[in-house]
Amino acid sequence: MHAAPISPPASPASSPSTVPAFAPEDRMYLDVYDAIMSHRLHAGTKLTEQGLGEIYGLARHHVRRVLARLAADGLVDLERNRGARIASPGAREAEDMFELRHVLEAKVMDKLAGRLSEADGRAMRELIARERDAWMRGDRPLWIRLSADFHIELAKLAGNALLVDALRRLVSRTTLLISNLDNAGQQPCSFDEHAAVIDALQHQDSAQAQEQMARHLGECACRLLTRAPARFDLRSALGKA
Image 1 (cartoon, rainbow, N blue to C red):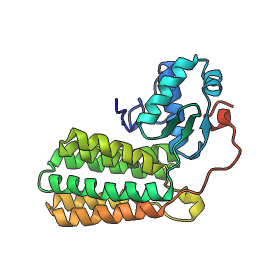
Image 2 (cartoon, one colour):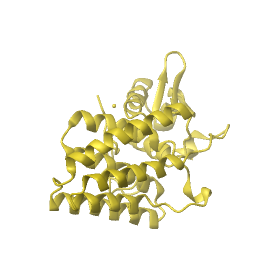
Image 3 (cartoon, rainbow, N blue to C red):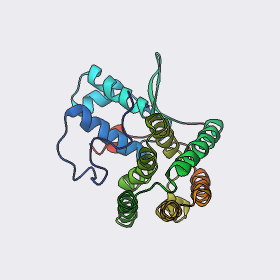
């Protein structure tokens, strides 16, 4: 997933209302990315070049480039002669993705235990604090993005670029499956689970770090999204109504 970053062009600490002006293609990418990650655009939703082009005043070749970037992220599926749809992983694919994440992220834990510097530990805890703050402020798109960023940033610290690219796509695609916790009546605990992982890494306990990460991924797999509604308004979902 060329591989685009898990975060849109904005800084991970930025929200759509505070980011600086972007080129039109980047603006579309950021808007669609946030709409997908906050589940305003649901899994399985069809995205048309014409509809997006009209909303953003862009020609179709610009729209195609944005859709290609989102496809590289694992967030959009492009089908020949059928156009683009928000990725909608089925139950088997979801199981396979979480199984692969368990393997890859266990390797990250093994590589980082005993190697996580004090500065890197502080940086990861700052990211967790921003994640918690975003949830407390009700900024769900930013919370989801930062929660995903946690896994990518850990992979980067492990120093394996191929592993980072693989996890980037898996994290993006599995994030599509996470349910709206408000409606589910559940309390989000991703930031607490992330903190437990960092605690184990800083105690140089590889086994405990792997156990905490496996527990976290197991919890993530339980927060599954219901199917998309049959009708929606693209302009409203992108905040352009």
